[in-house]
Every structure is written in structure tokens, then in C-alpha cells.
Length: 351
Ligand code: AMP
Ligand code: MN
Ligand code: MN
Image 1 (cartoon, helix red, strand yellow):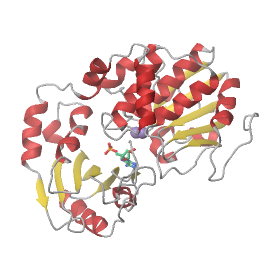
Image 2 (tube, rainbow, N blue to C red; image 1 turned 90 degrees about the vertical axis):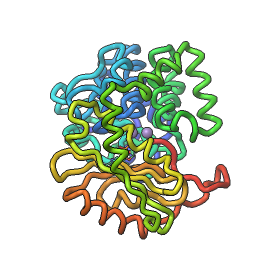
Image 3 (cartoon, rainbow, N blue to C red; image 1 turned 135 degrees about the vertical axis):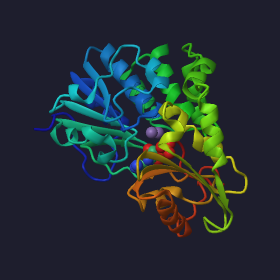
Image 4 (tube, protein in one colour; image 1 turned 60 degrees about the horizontal axis):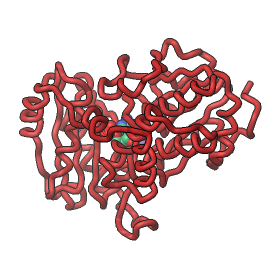
């Protein structure tokens, strides 16, 4: 039995922020879920909305399918202790809100709650969003899911305070590569968030600029293994490397995820790929493009997804085998279309 309230929308259409907020306004019990291996946009968005609903008196929990522990760099965002392990998510949640999650599968072990929940609100900005809920607030032009959450909070009339603003700022700063790819309205939102007392330097250091010493030798090994293929990616250049389990045995995921941001700076390559070994012969691959190639299309060939300039997938086989298939996928990947907003060649924003 689905929740009463607004009309469910199982087509490709998007509900308005008013409709989505109306659903949240009457909810007494809300489960907010982020995608597996949550980043600051997914978890920050879930926690910001969770904090606001908690303050309004609802019973609230926030969860994600994997890993077991909250990433260390994001722990400071959960000031009210809203995060619970997946086992503590009810088997039939009243209202499930999925944030920054393009498909049901990206919820990992919590994906089954989509079928049993009373209602499912999907709040997301991925172009590949599959509209797997009963209600959808999806805007592919939003720089981050956090932007859509702020729209919901404004509609609900929730006053912004520092803990909520910090969660939203975390999503904005990470999904826009530290505002390099933020549009003017996102800069204006950032100014609003900072006015609540968020310390951008401290927060950004925690999120992006703090690594244990072991990060440096890991980088030396992994970057030393990088290869540049000028002829790949339709002659625009591919740079790639692998992070083996043994390279990062004692390191956090944060250290491993940071590698692609260094590799992608290679001037001779349009596309960067980092193959991260998850278990022997299983790889989680991060793809980045500068501006011309749509890497989400290449990722989709492996069953993955993401945005035009930042995408990912998982694959089985040897590193060489995965790379071979990736070269082929990049060979026929479409080019990004010029953005109507900026008149330049630009991909979807954010992660
Ligand atoms: P990452 O390289 O992990 O930072 O991810 C870049 C973008 O690709 C993000 O929008 C992710 O949500 C998306 N992405 C990464 N891995 C996958 C996957 N296995 N399936 C679908 N989307 C993915
Ligand atoms: Mn994300
Ligand atoms: Mn995002």
C-alpha cells in the first residue's frame, strides 16, 4: 500500500519541488539513503534533509548499502547521529528518499527497500537517472543533489543553520571540483550557506586535503605506473593507471579516490582512467574527461554510469583485459554537445 498524498509519478516526468515537499511535510517516519560508497553530495544531501526533518519532529534514519563504516572524511557531517547500518533500516520503510542515486542498483543491499517502501522519493541530478521511485525530483542541470535538497528545504520553510548548511556545502564543493564547474546560481547558494557560519577552509581540508603519510608512497607507486596513450580516445589521448590492493592495503578509500584527480590533470590526455582493484580480478573504474568525450556512455557499456565528464563502472577480468574493452568503448563514445547555458563544450556537472 503506497502512501496517500500526492499522485505517484512512475513515468519519466519529474515532480515539482512543491509536490516533493508536500510528501515530506506529512511524513512521520523517513528513511534517507545514499548510493553505495557515498560521496559528500550523496551523504551530505541525505544528512541535510534528515537533520531538517528530524528537527520538525519526524523519526529519521540515514543509511547506505556499503561500506560498513561511514567514510572518515564525512563523519563530522552527522552531528545528530542519524546514520544507521543497513540492518537497522526497516524492511518496509514508510517513506524512502534516495539521494544522488541514478538507479536502484546503486543502493546496493538496500535496493530491495525500493519495492517494499510505502513511497519512494528520488532526488538526483544524474542524466542517467532511471526514475525508479514513485516520486522524482530530478534536475540534470543542478550542479549537485545538494542544490535540490536546498530547494526542498526552502519550500518546506526550514531555516538554514550551520550543521545543515555544512552538509550542503560539502556536496557542492566536491561535486563542482571546488566550484570550478559551478554556475553562478551555485556560487550564490554557497554564499548563503557560508552566511550560516560554515568554515569552508576547515571543511574542505577535512573532505579533500587530509591524507595520512602512507598516501605519498602509494601515489609514488601508482603514478609511476601511469601510461599515456596518445592515439586512444579517438586520438584525443588516454592516461590510465591501476591501484592494486597491495598498493593501498592500509589506506582509506579517500586516498584511493583521490588518485583520479591527479591523473586527470595530464595535459596530453582528454580521458583519464583509474582502475581500482576491489578484489582479485574485480575492478572499480573511475573515468574523467576534460570536455570532449562523453565518458558516461563508455561507462554505460560496462553497466556503469555517471556524468559526461565523470563516470564509473565495475568490471571483471585482468587489468589489461578491462583496459582493452575500455579503449574500444572510448573509440566510439559520443562527443559532448555544446551546453545551451554557456555556449561552450561542457558536460554534465558534479558527481
Ligand atoms: P567516481 O569515479 O567513483 O568518483 O564516480 C564518478 C561518477 O560515476 C559518479 O557520478 C558516480 O555516481 C558514477 N559511478 C561510479 N561508479 C559507478 C557504477 N559502478 N555504476 C554507476 N555509476 C557509477
Ligand atoms: Mn555521488
Ligand atoms: Mn552528485
